[in-house]
Amino acid sequence: MRKNKNNKSTTGPLAMLAAFWLAALLPFVPVAASAEPVDAAWLARINQALKAIPPLSGRFQQKLPNGGHAEGVYAMDWPDRLRFAYDVGGESIVTVKGKFVAVQETPGGEPNWFPVALTPLSVLRRAIAEGIDAPMVTNLSIRTDNYSITLEDPSGDLPGQAELFFTRQGDRLYAWRLTDVQNLVTLVRLSEIIVHEKLANSRFDIIEDDPDDE
Image 1 (cartoon, one colour):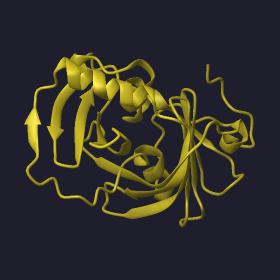
Image 2 (image 1 turned 30 degrees about the vertical axis):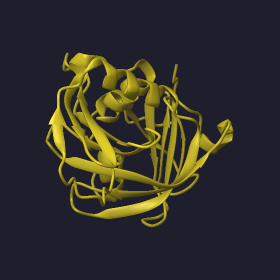
Image 3 (image 1 turned 180 degrees about the vertical axis):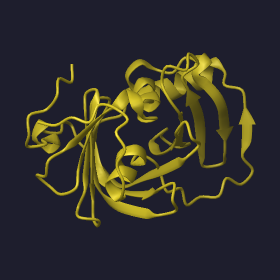
């Protein structure tokens, strides 16, 4: 099994997916948004919403830093399992398993492995797995129907920035915007959301032997 666990240079659509695949196509216009300092009540509310995320599946829409758009189907069992299968572009598949992201150009194809820690996804994963601490918050914007919280690692150990979008009604996480260290932005929006009691591990199989994801 070959693992890409460094900054090896790649080109083309696969490289774009590997570096920036997690982001959201946000169709709403943030009208009358107001930036507010995060307080204990809001932080507790958001952490509870993240902790309560059930296993999900559905469709996604994505906007890439180069202005391109993509869409497909996803399965999500945070914080350790996530799979995005694209409708076009060779049906590329991106799978998060533990500490690694696997990118396949075709279903069943040889995966390229990337450490989650080298992507802005690490900030999002930490927020869901461990909860958000006040020092991680750089902005909180409250809107009529939704709100968003912007996070980064205050220590600088985890790269990039993550902005999470929630509905005001039900506090449902439905989109996120990831910014890498070069200020390149990827956007992802979830739709046709189906809630599951449990998702089978087979939904996240990659065919080849997986790296140690403990």
